[in-house]
Image (cartoon, rainbow, N blue to C red; front, side, top):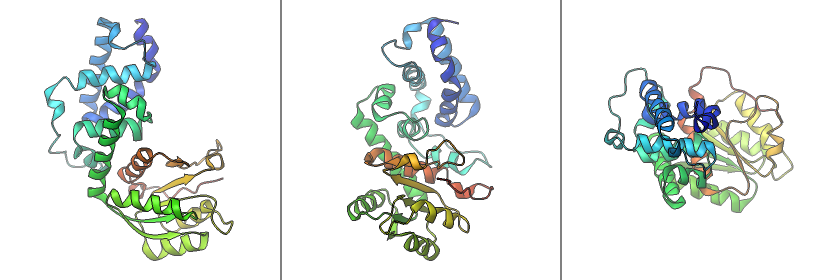
Length: 271
């Protein structure tokens, strides 16, 4: 194995995940990963030593993927039985699909995604916004915001509305939040942890999930209360102060993979 290949070996399972999602099939994704490795063996400089290994690997992969004309076209005619998240992904244009997956699924920063895609950060942000709008058009939903700071609640409402969603209620306490969800049955909840009357958004969400399942995105200044190393932990978490592009990507991701479609029972979140 070449030095370049050895440096990226630990990242290959994640690249395969990305490749399958971005191409729409296991066979095609694995073939492009194999082509990337072959190119690296033939010409190690394709994976720049000036970049972190994982960033360089994904950059090399996209250079090869985007060099083929077919990858500038949408995939059509998804086979019967394709999961909803795969069908949603197929409607995105290829570059928006790549940006969305890099940020929301592969967890690259905006700057890292720009390096991988060989564009500036403004272009990545534009592509992520495009992806968010496209996903929202497919699965626009009612949203309950649990937030006791009025200015933050207004910002969240404006961002969600710009993605095509409908904010049906803003709750400031645990009781208001539970009543709002019981009354409106939203498709998404954005929840802070520390609420106005000293009550807990975490407790509110856990009580909701006992009777009604929906995606939840925690937006909190206290991530350590959720990221304790125990299980289960929240899938979707944004730390205050949040970056607009990250929040949009995470909201789109939560709806994209919509946990309501999963057959298992709702998971409570332990503090």
